[in-house]
Image (cartoon, rainbow, N blue to C red; front, side):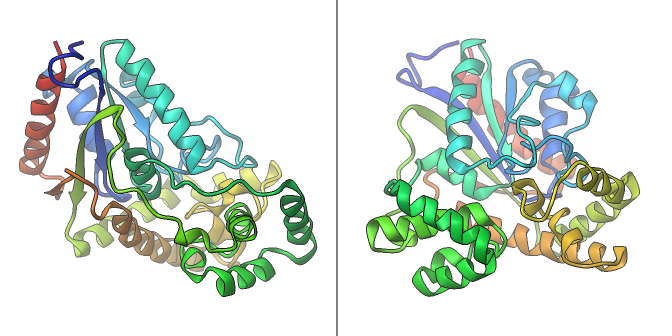
Length: 322
């Protein structure tokens, strides 16, 4: 691996962002696993930037790569947590950093790929520097969360920090509590802390944002949800609930799972999952605004679109591979 001439000792990282159902997994398979574009085969390992694929037992609803792809192309940060565990953006950045170092040490290029824009932005730019909470404040908020429930504390957050509340789900106990902790520690909203706008210096990034026409994207999302039901999403949720998962578990905040706790009939669940997935896809692009040097690629999954993406990626790999 050539790390001196072109990177100045930096680790080269390909970052591939696109919302759910855009065709990221198919693109990864074509470029790095199937060998139809043989230049890329065995030259990369994938770091999943999906906040919910970290959870075990949640395969259908998170659209995890299938066993054949996982066998042919190493993936990291998949199936590393129980749905009962909290996995934060800070956890993601720390684990992604470690995975990048390991992958590069094996003579391959790390490929960070996913649709969680919040995670990818934090990986590219770094985490905002928010204060640590006082342990007494944390304990009191935890007590209140158990006694009053998330809705009460969420309403309080809407008053104190409406900008943060707007991007936190009303049942996301961890993030509601954390935002209130920051407010208590700093005396000002979490959203007021300055975002970083410079790429982290330890990496040489190539960031590609796949942009699909909205009507096509929404149609693909609807088809994806129908396929999930055909594959057994309802049975997967039943199994998770039988194993103790509740609406309050971090994994059950995922789209495709949380809806089962809020409505009764499967038909309503299906429509709600589709609506939530479309809204989420639209929101994820906002996290990728103003990323330095990011390239926006029109993408419709066609052979031509795959070829254009492959050309950009090949140039990057040629620059950083011996």
